[in-house]
Length: 89
Image (cartoon, rainbow, N blue to C red):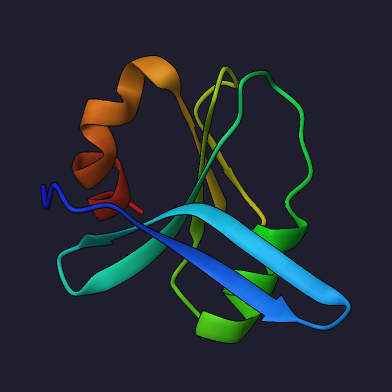
């Protein structure tokens, strides 16, 4: 996996948004949000999905593995399996 890390920031008046990381796997980019617990807001992720139109977004947290509303939730212990998980969707 590419070891360079990127992030995304939108700095428009009244519409600030940022995504923790943007990764590339194959020829696709994916926004990644990392959350400490099982809850959190995804307004910035939603904005990225609308503007940049990636296949889906990725949430890394303590939540169980799931895919819902264009968000792949990956538990912390499965981070190393991201390329395989993405390929299976």
